[in-house]
Image (tube, rainbow, N blue to C red):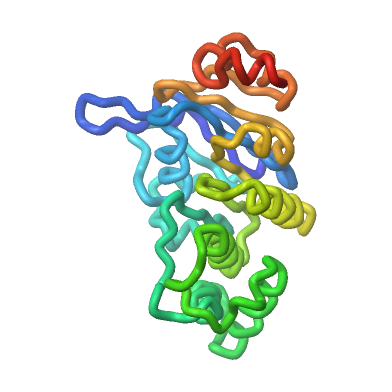
Length: 242
């Protein structure tokens, strides 16, 4: 049984259909890439899976149980966490306190939350920044803090929304290492990303959306050669380089 199963997921905003009958599954322990042009419906899918909005139609199952219609905090408690494209840390608090506050959602008390926060900070490699104010961080470190905050809720499924957006080459390489490390630690990952060479390195499978519909699914190699994906998203230039 897949860890996550999305069936005929549809989201309408008035007369606009942002996502239309999208179905895919995520197996435990894998990294699934979710790609497509801007406006394809990727983040809307994340919002529905994470409980930020309810689907108009369709259903979502996590570990065999329906979760569509549940609120975000209920879905978090079941073991799903997500990051955001635009990071919004508590800028007036330290990096450590940002992570500790996230850990409070699953901890018994402050002491346990501190332990979880320290473990996550060490794991994500931001221990040298623990006492810094979140508002002082570079975009690369803010993205890493965003991942740390999500990990502090102790998820089994992690949804990463453009974790490499705005990063330089070195930071992208570090992000790739962290995602692979997270996956190796036992977390299942779904990742939205536009940096295709990076996404191809971390993903076991890729689902492609365009205009709210799924147009392809397969291994990174198969997706890179798929004519419909090349036309809708990758472009001939990427195809020639791959």
